[in-house]
Image 1: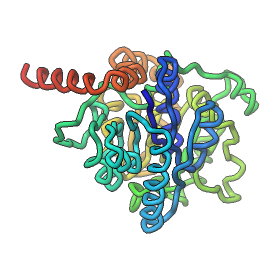
Image 2: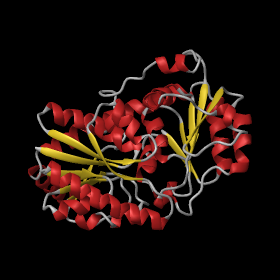
Image 3: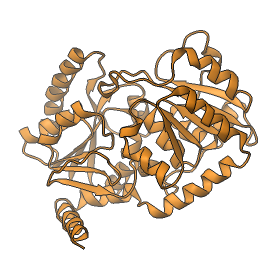
Image 4: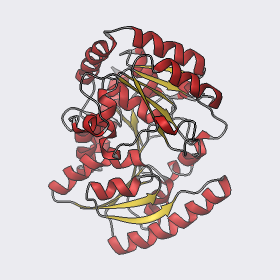
Amino acid sequence: MRIIIGVGHPKQVHLWKNIINNLVNDGHEVLVGAWDKDITLYLLNIYGFEYEIIGKSYKGLIKKAYGMLESDIKSLRVANKFKPDIFLAGAPYLAHVSKLVAKPHLYFLDTEHASIAYWLTYPFSDVICTPSCFKRKLNLKNWIMFDGYQELAYLHPKYFKPDPSVLDDLGLSKYDKFIIIRLISWGAVHDVGQHGIDAKMRAQYISKLERYGRVFINSEAKLGKELEKWKLEVAPEKFHSLLSYAQLYIGEGGSTATEAAILGTPSIHISSTAKYCGNFEDLHKNYKLIYTFSDDRQALEKAIEILEDPNSKRKWRQRREKMLKEKIDVAAFITDFIENFPESFYELREKELEDKCS
């Protein structure tokens, strides 16, 4: 089978990397259609994946609309050349092209509040696949769910082992405590009108958190000179290893907050959209692995409370073990679903209907 996968964000490289390896090992031919955004191309190169650039990131709604048209055209050219049997993506452009070439499109998503991109994709997708904790009720006949999180596709212990060399890279020992603060650019369409840590609060975050360990700031946007001292300089492919060793993660990045929680690192997410996300609700309500706040002062208070507890990291590791026992191997599930499509879809829909009736 010939498969094309759309990757528009660095997280999606991580999401698909083990699935791509599974598919290739099973004899399938896979091509990535990539957006030139942040470190996406860097990660694709590091992992040795074949890809075609079919778009880039633009700022502003008008430019983003132009970027989508541009990506549609480039995606069609790539598809006509590669001749895929199936399209997989988390962005609209491959969904549009799939209909033009009459091939199925499978849409994997987990962010409830990214409404614009989703409504540009739903009508063109043959299957919509979300975590079972997804809070938006789609009421669509082609909607299926799995009991896990997308982040487990790359951070499940079956696939991920922390690389201790990242500590050496930063002059740390395994006994040193450190905290990671994450700042995002708020440039995505679904970020419009949202907010996280107030700029005036950042200095206060640093001064108070430094009492408990070294502070690193990981930022999408360029940091001002006043914060440059705390800027995290680490190879992107080692970031998850660093996150697993941290005493605490606190920040605006939703995916990073989920990643920290899944790795067993105390995690605090700050965003005015946090209440809309099923991942956060499930990880908090059922496992106490993450806390979410729209108020940055309340978030800082919670961070200090966690850091004051010398056993917090051990508690999070124990909670993580409970979560891992109750969730599925997401990479294996998605691989099997793709390889056995469309039969896999009918089987899952039938099972879901049986569960509802029982």
